[in-house]
Length: 305
Ligand code: HSE
Image 1 (cartoon, rainbow, N blue to C red):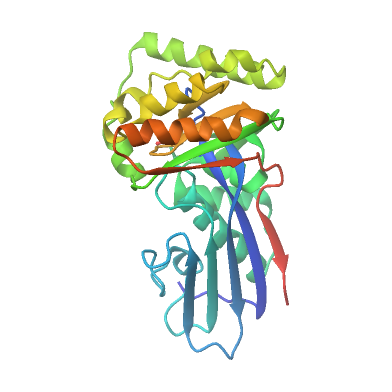
Image 2 (image 1 turned 180 degrees about the vertical axis):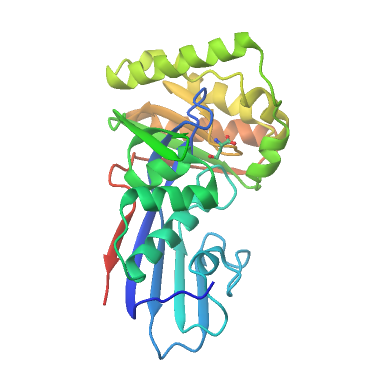
């Protein structure tokens, strides 16, 4: 679709997200201090649609009008638009990189298209592209969030984010597509699994709210997705166990994987990360751990000209 875009230059920064947090499959998510930056310039001097990808995804993400950002902006090769991506979020690792790319593009579109649109427009637009409120909602708004769709409406609830903890992610060197990681899940779940899950989501909300972090080990147990995804992520269970042995309060697969996420006392963040790396290594999986914080600002948009 050809769109009317205002001549302008905008910079959008979108945080990585870890979703599910164990039992909160498809509903809970949290923004992390790791970012994708996107600059979009609409100006007559640009020779067609120029896309430059730096950082994560350089060489693998398309650098032409088939790039996801260009597609969301509705660009063809003849449009005089330059898109520069500087990606800090590893691709297809369960850290919300595709939600960040799509949300970033929708935010750029809102800044460049004539007319006023509110955050609800951004959310429903990004969700129609992405379909996962557990990544899109915290990526837009920051913090820890519960997000769901009720009919056409997106309901999002801020949780008290455990900002006093380290958010440790251990990122295996291989990619896993969300589609593949969802295909292996059963379509129906036994009632006992539903009860197990709703109890733990409630417990997690309470644990965050009251800073009762010793409850997280129980609250982050999951039966809906992790037991099935284990076979796609060699080392997952061992990395979760290693995180607990090194002092983490809670640990789980990050989103659809393959990264593993842990919440730990700040002083233990680095040792929890190393323990997870070693656990993956024992299963012959290379990985790297990052000790991050929780982003509470969400996505930001800066008009540069
Ligand atoms: N909650 C999704 C899943 C991840 O576990 O498949 C993408 O948000």
